[in-house]
Length: 440
Image (cartoon, rainbow, N blue to C red; front, side, top):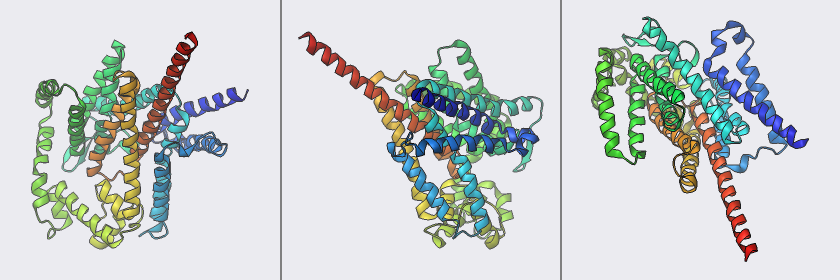
């Protein structure tokens, strides 16, 4: 009976995780006012986290199983410590609450997913929500809708919620290409393979129409690391060239021009823009403006080196000193300026342990069952996701997003499943030895 109770509780958490994933990524509270009014996302998340807390108190979840858990707790503590010393305490407190909300996906994943079938179910629900995010604006674009005037150009935007800005839509699309690619690579069903192939094509088209240089860099990063991990590097380059030619040919002229502005980034870095006004920098180009914001972020860090300005307080610091109420547009500068060296070190530890889990998992799986399994593909997808996200983070303020916690949760689950595989292999080896010993 106790075993059935634990199984039922585990299944409750699992289906709760799937429901929360669907609610969060669909941004259903923004789509339907009544659900937003009743805080449907908050209610579902709170119930799941309460059950997880009970499991922790009962000792059913061991936070000592992986160093990433402790790194996550230290990061949250560092974030909390900034509140009393924040530039604007009310802002820091509000964003700490938001951080907890985005962090929630992490304990949900590590508590709810305890076998490969559940991992597979979660991944497909996640990809289904990703499909919703990119297919909706794609369909609107075919009708000439869904575009907003931003940075002196028409750019495709997301339908609603956190992913409505073109940069956010382009960013989440580019960084999730690894999941689409590795699911396509490993999928045996022709129908599913075709659906994933279509999704990849739609994703690339959406990235083009967002005109997001951040997303362009994300695609290049994914392609580069895919080449690094590829065993047939020459063949990969040949295939890539044959893909680039039609992609470039069918790209809108505005996208081509926007992409080619990436080459001017070095000139912007070398140029002295300190004598220009913020409005003049914006007119000169967004990269010039962003470079100045990065320098101001470093000034904020040198003036507040230990705990920083407080969560999301760079905007206020920048506005009061320079009259320009903009964020730093760089995750690492954001971490230094808003959380100081303590928060920055805590954030780096989360990234390092996440990548460490995935690298160890890949090594284990390569030795036990080769490189063709679903688990190996997902470890590859997750590590390319985090690498792409790290590069994309250089162009946006994503420190408090759930990207890191999604990758962290998946890394711990995959690592845990690999440990189970190792134990099973040991048991098999023991049984074989005992069998031959008894025969003798």
